[in-house]
Image (cartoon, rainbow, N blue to C red):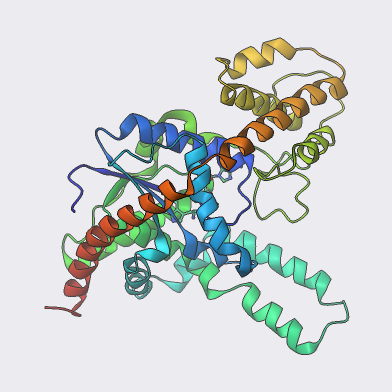
Length: 370
Ligand code: TYM
């Protein structure tokens, strides 16, 4: 099965801790895009399960969280019976790892070292280690933490990401700004390989064109509740600033009630001076939209403009977020796992054919095959 149409491809890591930033910033827009574009494009939604342990995780939970990732797409409205939409696990298409190795050998060490996500994550890890290493811990254990915490996998995972994209000749890759550098790298490595070996890969469109194509959806950034200067992120350790899709509604309610605000004492949308309140206005709009209400951010802003008691405003947001979670969790519980398993299997069958074709072309070009 060769895709006859251009390809849109994207993925959300499976770590069992998908939060409302991923959901509203990526999953919902992806599902919406898949529904709208599937007549003109092949839509590849894959679960980057090999990317799940670039940083240490609890492996006993991984298998479930991979399936949960597919269940979340389904609960968000992904039509499993649409044949132009392919839902598959990265690890079930071995060509991903094989192409990644080949691309590794054409990637500069310095090129990877410059990736900001690597720098951020590894620095964060080192800071954590600094605090842990003082605890009474065995020398061996301390060494294990230090040696495997910042893995080679974390370092060169953008190469695997490039393989994910290039195997299928994807032209459009809808992702948030935090992935822009990785997308640029995918363009660089594909152009480099094309120069050296002839036209091997379809080069994804430049990021600016991608933004134009997908509109504003991709710019959305839900912020951390405790520190609204930074985006809501899975790797936040306290979890207090992050609302996970699996949070108990009451726990999420508490998190919103203790969200950081400001001392200006007036509800207004001002990202620079009132990032916390602005973030809550966005979250409120999104959960209302999810409940089927036809509201825009502007309408929410004017509804609460000038309100002075932050506690009251937070309670409104907290109530509606808790309601959203309860509804979402009910939808998730109702998902048909059998339908998911069979969708995964049929997509994986088809994607192995497409991916192997590209892999063989590359293997021939580098001299591994005739
Ligand atoms: P990941 O799993 O970290 O994030 C998945 C998507 O969610 C977006 N995102 C957000 N959007 C809005 N607000 C937030 N607070 C927020 N946090 C995350 C991310 O920008 C992303 O679009 N490397 C990728 C997964 C991947 C991939 C690929 C994506 C692997 N291979 C190939 C596309 C193509 C990642 O770690 O995303």
